Length: 248
Image (cartoon, rainbow, N blue to C red; front, side, top):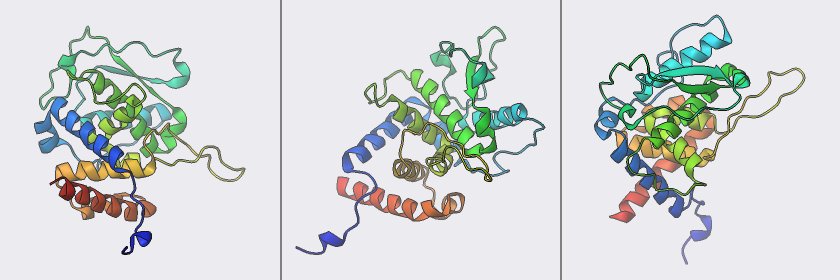
């Protein structure tokens, strides 16, 4: 019978892993695969990828969004940043398929309506959480511009938005902010959270999938992950490699 009893359980099941790979393949077919391979960075939560200073919460939120759009290749999207408390409801997206990701984006026409992008002021003190929230929002709207619908049910659309956010390069920030504690205690700093649809293990596995497509070594990723995620990432890489070998 061997030693099956001593084998650790996989991070995610095979069905979920195949679906995540299918979503990545769909994203590559819809959102400029050459741009992805040549230009999409593994976005790091540091001052190199998010430089700049801010004198207010609003300035910090705007600075983080500016860099998020640039790393995503979406700086050409006309947009307006609005704090969630000032929103009654999000208006319909004014974007058109012509505004999908591209290597050399055009200058938007002045008369184009901006995409209203919300932010939670409480998340500004936790930049990784805010950037992951931005990336989810961008992933959702980029998905709406696809010429072929995502291979997903209605219930899976939030998962697709996060997977597209990871495809855009923000997997480290998704993994690092998958668990963010809400609330706080009397003497400690309040916690901050985002609505995460991918679990921590799923986010780490999707990050490994991104790095596989980008041919990135583990040493390029591990220093930027929280310490408790590093062994999980190593396991995700092994599981992904095993599944690729079994498929062949």
